Length: 117
Image 1 (spheres, rainbow, N blue to C red):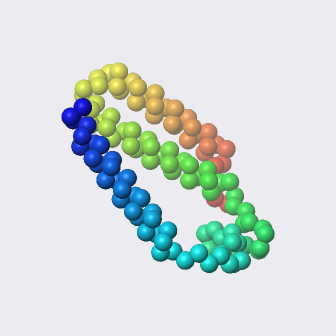
Image 2: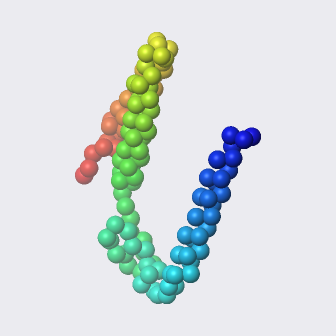
Image 3: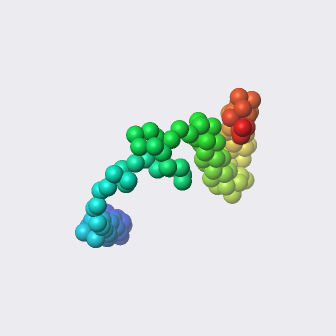
């Protein structure tokens, strides 16, 4: 249990800092609600009151694909560092992972998810 004292101290300090920042911001802000502030506004496109702007689903699909690509990159780095220690089993596991991702990308590409029209 002695080894966890530093972790408990760290969590306590972090909790106090978060509460202090939240409390300070809550006291300093000005809450002036106006009709203009309540209108939906996204990406520089002002909408008509009561009507939210419509965005094509392709925008979100491409964004999710970039997130998947980032996760893939994060998975490949530690694997590459420890490749010799993992041996053939690690190589096979990562090959299966890469094939599954490649099939997913091929499916999205075939369906036209990466085409901007």
